[in-house]
Image 1 (cartoon, helix red, strand yellow):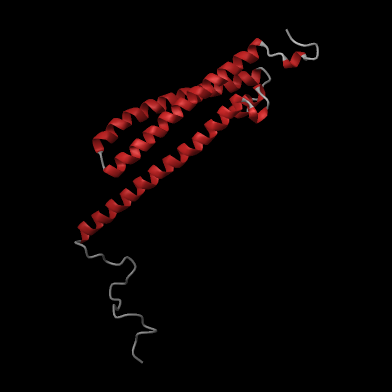
Image 2 (image 1 turned 90 degrees about the vertical axis):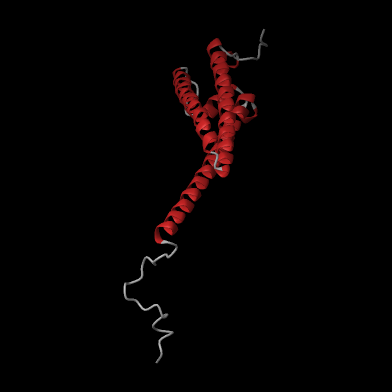
Length: 175
C-alpha cells in the first residue's frame, strides 16, 4: 500500500514494469554479447600475431554467430525504443530509457546502460587495434613482394630517367 503523499505518477504501472524488465533483460543480453565480442577480438589479435590461419578460420565461425546475435539485438533495441515511444517514455536511446525508470544516473539500469556504452567504446578500440595490425601486415607483405619482384634493387619512384645520381646541382656541382 502506498502512503497518502505518493502521487499516481510515482506508482509504476504494469506496462512500465514490463518496459523496465525488458530493458534490464536487453542490457544484460547486450553485456553478454559485448563480453563475447571482446573475447573474440582478443583471440583474433593473438592469432594474427601468431599467424595461426587454422585458428583464425575457426574464429570466423564465432564471429558470424556474434554478427547474428548483434543483428538480433539491433532489431530488439529498435522494437523496444519504438514501443517506449508509443508509451510516452524516452525513446531516443536506451540510456535515456533506463534513466527514466530510476533516479537519473544512480539507478541500476542507468549504470548498466552506461557500462554498455563504455564496453562499446572498448570494442571500438579493440577493433581499431586489430585493423591497424592487419594493415601493418599487409604493408609488410607488400614491401616483401616489392623486394622479391625487383630483386632487392628498388628504383626510385620520382627520379627522371637520365638524372644525375652525383648529388644536388646547387650545392654539390663544381663551380
